[in-house]
Structure formats: structure tokens, C-alpha cells
Length: 101
Image 1: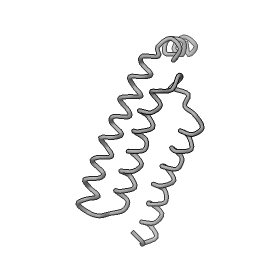
Image 2 (image 1 turned 60 degrees about the horizontal axis):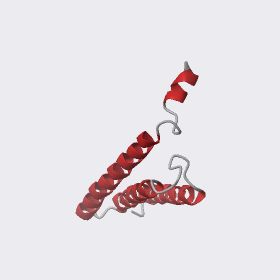
Image 3 (image 1 turned 180 degrees about the horizontal axis):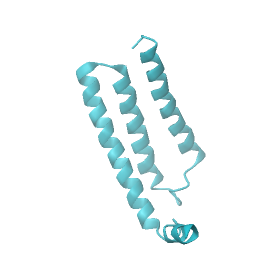
Image 4 (image 1 turned 90 degrees about the horizontal axis):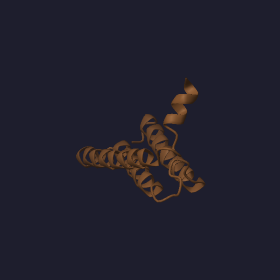
């Protein structure tokens, strides 16, 4: 059963679905970044700015991955940039909890 399900949705057989979903997720990430920028503008809370940067980076990288030959695999550069954006949010959370934000 699992083998059948995996073969039906494999990226080799349905690359258009991968591209559509990756573009949709990228667009939604950029929309979330705009919302967090609005919240940051109203409150000047650095945590909102970190989340806006995170979603903007994720959205841009998702859209950039569409140009790759195999967008569902990614590259080391994309992985490192995604890791740095997550560490940015983690740093902002730690800063807020330490009482400096």
C-alpha cells in the first residue's frame, strides 16, 4: 500500500505538482512576512522583525528553488540559508526571553 502511494506522488511522475506547491508555499511565506512587518511597525518588537525576515527568506528561497533542475531536492546553499534564518528566529526568541527585547 505505501509503495503504491509513493509511486503515485513521486516527483519524477508529477513534477508540475512539486512546482505548483513550491510556488504556493513561497507566495504564502512572503504574505506572512508582510503581516509580520506590519505587526513590527505597530509594536517595534524585534521578535516580529525576526519572524518577518524568516518568512521573507523562506519565501524567496522557495521561489528561487523553482529555477533548479530538481526543486524538491534543493542544494547545500539553500539548506545553509534556511538554517541561518531559523537560527535568526531562535536568537530573537532567546533575546526576548532573556529580557533584552
